Length: 614
Image (tube, rainbow, N blue to C red; front, top):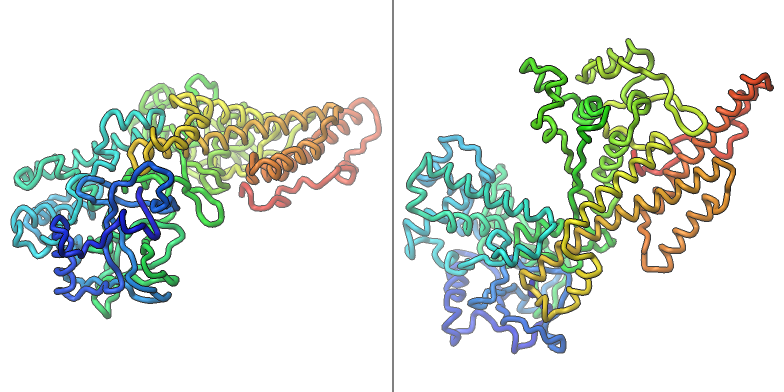
């Protein structure tokens, strides 16, 4: 969206200018606030003319900040600027409580009382009550409303919000999961509207469905979560909702009980004429676009972290012979428990389409080693399990112990006791099994075979996801460099920014899977006596890629390959030696089993890792 730290005079104008008749509503708005005790003398509203696509116009500065509403009609591209140098820790805006619209005010309206008493299951209850107040007050009190000057300056349309996009604009999101979210949002708003109409038919007199949607997105993009009188609430705060987004944050806001006012305080000095920003928080671009109507071109924190996410759907293949066992473990028995309460047989449960839908796991991942990334790898390892591996990770000790352990955790015992194994098969031998309470606990590789299959599965899922888009990542990058075809601040550009960000995350995990399989190829060749290229040389080549080509390989992938697969490599060597020792003993040779650990090339203690998957 449009932003400028210091726009030239030809592209911005002070909204207080009396001789600009078209902006009288803003003058009335500011006068209304001042008359009711608001303070913002250090600040001024500015509006911005429609930005051109001429790159030589240096009055348009692209930085890491965006705007909530970006309509170019009626010059509704606006920002808040400082009138003078503002020192740090200065209250630059104070809006009295009487100028706030709160959830409680919506509940107190006749319509709000009806909705409250009906105990409806609404999608966003706090938003609904703010919407109810605005819609009711505007219709019932009209120009006599206390808040009329505020209503006048709210955008008349929200064409930048994806739920209002045309079919052509939505086509720019083809392949993106955001299309599903947009459809879900539209459906949820419509469900709320008709549910309220059923208990309060007069809602239809106050607004149409389209007006209800407009109010929902106004509230969604502008409300503040506050604590007032010791209670958490949400409020519309006139003028404060004009501040645009920037990270890292330069101001902080709160409701001060002693002042009975909403205040904004600077966290750093702001020079005269500069734009004053709020931070909408660290968010994925899909949340910015869906809720505020913009996507950040370079959505990165100061430490380089990018919060952009993409969902990855995991499900157990219904043709997998271990389908039932994997479903049970991945869902902690929830599917079984629900069905068994209805006296459904186990076979019937897993044959039903409802159960199949219930086991799908959607995990939002970003380019980070966070909890969701760890859960993704844990689930992939379960999906990759053969029978011996699955029995090992879901059981411990003898069959009786397994039954007791699984019962304690709310899991059935039959699946665990059918084919219990005390050891897991692997390259040259096995390792002792471990009991895992849930799939989240599988923080480290189960074995070389399993990790390879898990990475193959990940690459297959990523490849399928990327194939759903009509363009490649490289094409998106090229398109975004063409500001004539993809104008800045346009819906078309924001759609392109969104899908590019999704693909960047998908490419990260595709690279992760490929790198992991390359390293595991090397480990298997080493175990078979071929040490060229060596594990160390392979890791060094990855490190060269990272340093020489602008982080072609992310440090997270490097750490996984070196630390996690390095630990797996040591474990596989130990298993191989144990297997050789057992073979020697069986054939009459000297039993060297007691010396296995001392001859190992390195410790296999998983605690050697940094906190990567634990």
